[in-house]
Image (cartoon, rainbow, N blue to C red; front, side, top):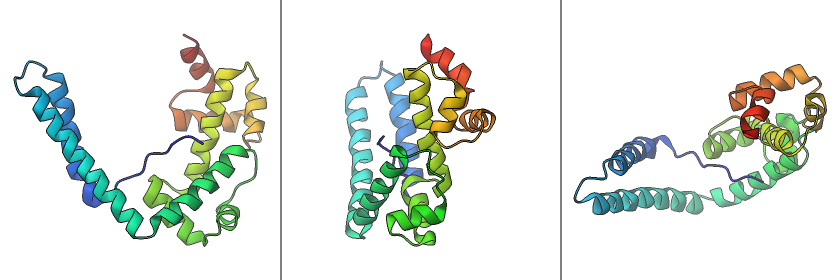
Length: 171
């Protein structure tokens, strides 16, 4: 299963955003004398914020929830063609419906069905690149009834149509 980026709670998002912007600005300005020490300082601060956040999640019992969610998303990744619903996912992951929605939003920064769509589109993107399959076959293999609805979802998620994605990646 692909690694997913953990969304940082709002408490830390602004300081991390500011640090990241400063870090990027400094990497562009390579003519500064103290460039290396400034970058090192920003990197240490970012690591500090991330460690603090991860420690909070470990202490607050989120590690068990995260493990169960990762297992659930692996199940979805392995079976994208299934007719997944929030209720079916909650049962499969041994969560209540509302708890699954809250945890998915908190940890992954999206809704439950948006996560299913992301995983389906990741699979579709790899199928588009690995094989010269017809879009109808790819759509069916990831749970879409029609190539049209698949193509719309792919474009909404990835930003380009499946055909354009195939062309761009072939270059």
